[in-house]
Every structure is written in structure tokens, then in C-alpha cells.
Length: 299
Image 1 (cartoon, helix red, strand yellow):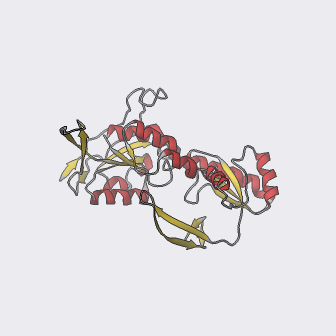
Image 2 (cartoon, helix red, strand yellow):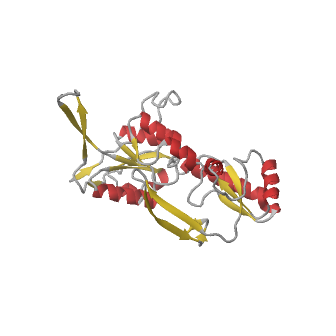
Image 3 (cartoon, helix red, strand yellow):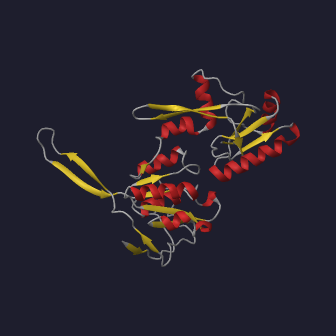
């Protein structure tokens, strides 16, 4: 089945949709793929909702609703999510910034919505714009991918408030483990050994300099909302510390919308051991070992 998507110059949310914080969100220079034909490779998936009208012998009420996923990301992860969803027969909506209008994930999706300008803090990190896109396209689910809003507990709560199923952890889990500084404190309270570092987020440059001297160089400056190797800087000497601190904070703010950072002692030689757990039934899979890193990413 083929369909030609209509031209839409902008996407506007309902006034007051976001609890009084906006009076209607309008994304600039927004348009669907003009004149492009989009293939729908699978029959649209439907989910049956069964309600028990009475406890004893009551009739069952069954209604069907077409499922649709908004993929709140870009690049490789968005492409993988869309392809997998299509294999399951579920249509997808892509979001994109003005610079990504011709990206592969936009072409693969069944529908697409522009959510802002090229910088991520004006598009992929703007919760009202992403949520407005999901609501306007009548999406029932949202897949965050990784990075951007994937570990934002407030975003998950807002999805739930508007009847959109967030494909990922619940807000409480994200608050505990998604925030790296909070995760460190949680592990300490549980008696798990942690790498020497700061207690909580750095509150000032002066405090950061003092703690770096106490911990001892080299030190790692890490974004508390970080992921994918971004928002991290290795300071080997005191002379370069302040400059690298500002770089880490700026990168974290641009990538995650949160410039909070903390310090950890840099370990020259280390072995990272990851334990993969499948929740719900708590299945333990295996231990993954890695010791090689490139650009702060495990190989």
C-alpha cells in the first residue's frame, strides 16, 4: 500500500496542553516529506482491550485500537527501531530537526514531523515539541532510543499523563539509575564499592578545583545525565582543569539539556564487567567483560 503524505507547514499543540507552560507549541520550518511516497510494508497492528463489565458472568467489552510508535531519536538507533517495528506490523512516526529532513530514518518512517532547528537543544531535547508531535499524530507508544530524552524521568511522566506508553524504564528507575551522580550515591548506600570521586554534583568552579586536588590527578569530569561518551573530559594536570570543566558542562547542556557534572578518579587500567538482566522474570544472561575503550566508549 502506498500513500502520499500531505504537506504540513507546522505542527501546533493544543493551547494549554503542557500544564500552562505553553500557549501552543509551533515548530518552525516544519513539513512532511513533500510529494514523497511512503510504503506501508505490513498490515497495521491492532491491540484488543478487554474490559470486564461484571464480576459474575458479565459481558466482555472488546475494543481495538491501531498502534503507532513515535521514534524520538535520529540516526542509526531510529532506523533500527523503525525497521523492527515494521517487521512487527507497527507503523512509525519519525521526528527530525531542520538539518535532518532528508535523513534515512525520516524516509523509512510512515509519517514524519519537524520538531525544531538543528541544535538538539532546540529540537530533540525539547519535551513539548516531541510530545506535541506524538499527540498530533495519534501515537500510542513512544520509543526514545538512547541519549536525548531516553533517561529523562519528567518526559516519561508527561508521556503517561497524555496516554502514551513509554517504551523503557519507569520514572522512578530512571531517577535512581539514569542520573549518574544519583546512581553513585545509591551504590554507596547499598555498600557497593565505587571509584573515588565527588559526593554529588559540583556546585562551583572553586569546589571543583578543591575536590580535584583532593582526589588527585588525573581526574575524569563526567556529565550526570551523560551517555554515549559525551559530556566527559580527562584532566591530567591542574592547569587544564578549568578549561576542560567548562567544555564538559557545555557539551552536556547541548547534548542532554543538563550541565550537571561530577568528578571521578581516572583509572589508567581497568576491566569493566557488565551484568545483563532481563526484568519481569529477572533472567540473568551472562557477564560481559571489556577493557578497551575509544572516545570513552567500551569496545
